[in-house]
Image (cartoon, rainbow, N blue to C red; front, top):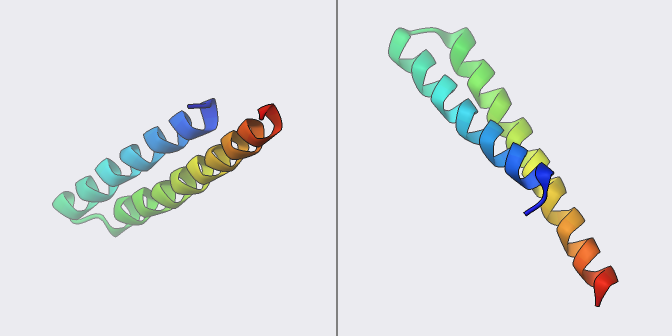
Length: 60
């Protein structure tokens, strides 16, 4: 795993927690921030996945 995969996964998980917290406390702002963070995390993880594939292809 590279740093983008790790950071992306962590950001996605943090976003899920933030979204759930927003639902529990009734805060749409927190819920939406959590959803945004999840999207950012998934995008960063995908970028990391692509980097890994390219690096593996170059090393073959």
